[in-house]
Amino acid sequence: MAALLGQAPGLAPYQIPRKVPSVANCNTRNPMRSHVSLQCKAHLSSASRQCTSAPALHVPCTRRRGACSITRGGRLLCRAALDSMEQQYAQTAKKALEVNLDPGHYGVMAEIGAGQEVARWFFRVGGAAGTIAKSISAYDMSVSDSMYGACSRYVTRERLESMLEYEYLQCNLTLRKERGDNTAFFAFADTVVAKAYGRNNECHGWLGLKYQSSPKAEVNTVLIHVRMLEGTAQLQAEALGILGVNLIHGALTKGGDYYAIIGSLFDDLSRTRVEVDLVDFAGPVFEHVDNRFAALTLVQKGLCDAALFSPQGQMLIPQETLRKKNVLLVRGRFRPFTLLHNDMLQGAASQFFCEPDGNSAEVNVTDTYDECVFRDDTLVLLEMTTRDMMEGGDLLDWTSDKGIQMEAFIQRIDALSTMGYTVLLSSFRRYFKLAGYLSTHTTESIVIAMGVPSLRELFTERHYADLDGGILEGFGRLLKFDLKIYVYPTVDAVSGELQTAAALEVAPGVQKLYEYIRDRGTIVPIENYNRELLMHTDVSKVVTESIRAGTPVWESLVPRHVVDEIKENKLLGYKSAAVAQPESPTSVLHNGDKPHSSNPAHPDPKAKALTDPIGRQTAAK
Image (cartoon, rainbow, N blue to C red; front, top):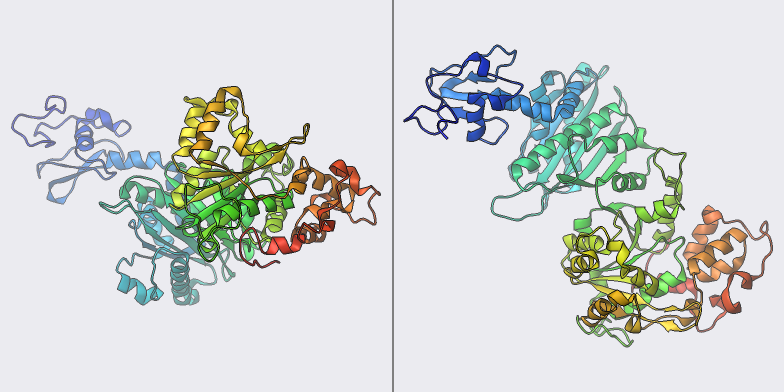
């Protein structure tokens, strides 16, 4: 090793010999070919690598920025390593320099956790004196509280907003008399928790920018929540610095184009390093932006796997919303949400939830492997996937650069929100990836409710052809999360026989696998269901055909609040009966069935939607 490094006998490890390499060996374009740089690489792994040297040593270099130069105390700074890092993140350095060279913006930066990595980029590329009035990092809680106010948790949206408000006001009030006529002020802040030594903690944070788009203009804000996926605090800090530069540059240079801002967040980054699962735009330049559009864009562009929406349409943080919660989930296109979806959720809830006295609901409960759970400890999710939207074609818009009808997407979210549910928008095609996502954020029970047709598809081998282990690998990855699949029955369209999960036949090659998974308790038949609803082979198809034809049949198959939403917003091609072509109500129903609202055994759709299946009264819009 000593010979490889050109090391003289008797010298300490990594010490540079008195016989210094010639100028020819000092190569900034390929520092690995330089003996000195090779020793520096062997000694340290950080970007600012140093190596021990004799105090009087000096290595000359003819390059404009030499690969090496002596510093006080006998420390040798490997500038080639710094140059290499700037080349690796050339786009980030270019963005930071572009912001520094713009005389129109001036502001402050406040960072808590993971160092001052964002501000460091602006100081490092040069010209920061024209951009940054102040850079601060208040790590001590008492110092932080003295500026931003006391709080119980420091890595929260509320803390970030307090930091932005304080720093922006201080900057604006202090400097507006001197330079407010020609300068747009900004304040950047972040509060994060990085990887802690000796602990496997959740690493996440909030970043935000409060800024004027022009001098004396009203302020705008952009907030993002990020999960840091790197394994070390150093790498997390590096990724955070790049993300912060991208956020500042995008907001200051791309105007109100939220789509372009989101698209630039991962420049010089990858999905394996960070995940952005929430973004919030506010202010005059973003007055046209619905943040649900932004959430869809995050999932579409791969910045995160899924986005959560509250019943009020607000984006939620998954780890906060799902933490210590049981989950009951139904996947679908919900075009629209029908009484069949409602009945499936009711049946699953009756076997999953406990009554207030601790007993399960009054049905024949076949899930004997786990105790029931309480409704207040459970989150009911309706999941839609972007893949279904695109492949189904019902939301495609080839005339848009976004490829999807944004307004139609929002209308569908609104229709589900009227039912009081939380909506999950994901990019998951396979259920084991969905299960992995949920298990990342909660350690409690997870139930996925589906119909018999979907269960058959789950046991179709061709869906696993790209996995090395085929269908066995797929189910192995699903079963490790110890979730349950509650299966809603169906009626065979040909024979009219009821098909349940208890005696379901799948492809012969996987029948034994199905029976094993069913017998171990993963697959649980739903015992409580409405037989009349099952008589319709495809309720969603019946509903959409009836809406387009202008007949009233669909109203008996959809919860009342969804009916009102469809009529009010003219969704799914709705047209009033007065202008629609007359059509017999039985023409889109099978076997001449009458609407359920006329059946005394079937409760009023409005009443069902407001009570079960979520097990408590919900507010309707």
